[in-house]
Length: 146
Image (tube, rainbow, N blue to C red; front, top):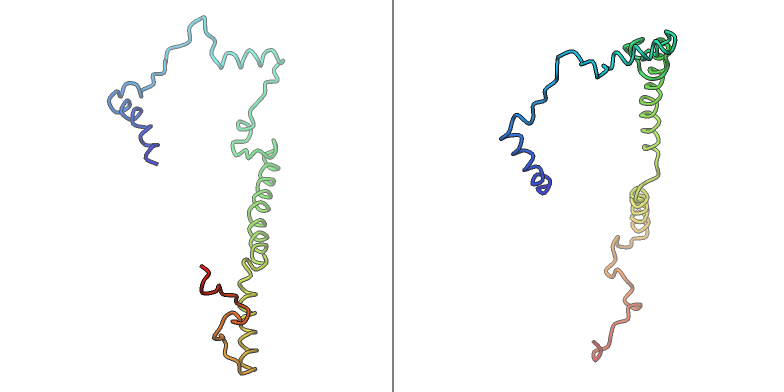
């Protein structure tokens, strides 16, 4: 994390000590005869295409959502997409996550422990035995072995 800030040091010092480098100047003068403005290029293109210039969807419909060129269909499709994409996904996704199998078998372990406790209480056996393993099955090294 500190390495990232160390890389920003020269940039920050340049901006702080030389404020003129952060200023951008835009010319407000009319274009010279050698350079063509973007608006002139668009008009020339419109003239070439016999008056059928391509109009941006945002100019036709300022509330364009990207679903259709028709504003009414665009709004309906946007509402449907958000309804199904968000509302239904949250409901179905939440239901799916709720009904996932028991992670780590915690619920099964609890049920099994309760079953064993009831069984041992009914038999009169202590719940936890003195020896966890059967001592007759444990093989210990001899006195001379290490």
